Image (cartoon, rainbow, N blue to C red):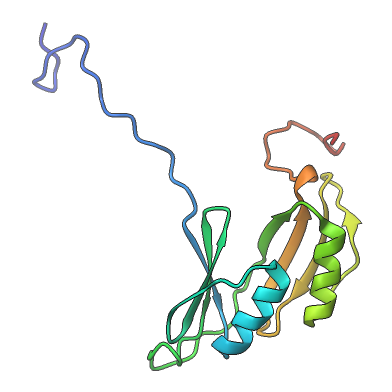
Amino acid sequence: MRCLCGGYQGSIRLPRIASPHLFRVILPVSDIEAAASFYARLLEMPGTRVSSGRHYFDCAGTILACYDALADGDPEPVGPNPQYVYFGVEDLDAAHARAEQAGCRELTGIEVRPWGERSFYARDPFENPICFVDSQTLFTGEHAWAGTPPTT
């Protein structure tokens, strides 16, 4: 039996398209050396210099890219991100201590949010807003709740 598209009905199998995944997040910085040092301390990993103005950190398959436009040869600097970049961590208290030692700006205390996440907010030395969340309390929107935080 023919269908309107000119093909045939039957057991035609279309290839399954995998869901996209987040590949890279850019953090604009004004000093690639200072950024590499700061994030190495904060994330407890050295990362990898991939060009004169880019230093990458593999965060569970998503690349955190510190990007210094001028050091990479671009004609103009790039300002900080307007929105937070969120990191899920196993030990939030240790992450908070590292953030304090690394010199995060506007560092808040650890709090439990109305939606159940335990987290803290800060700014890196380049004014990028960042947030660290206890991975045991990550809220991904999968729980239906109306005014009552999900249980953890």
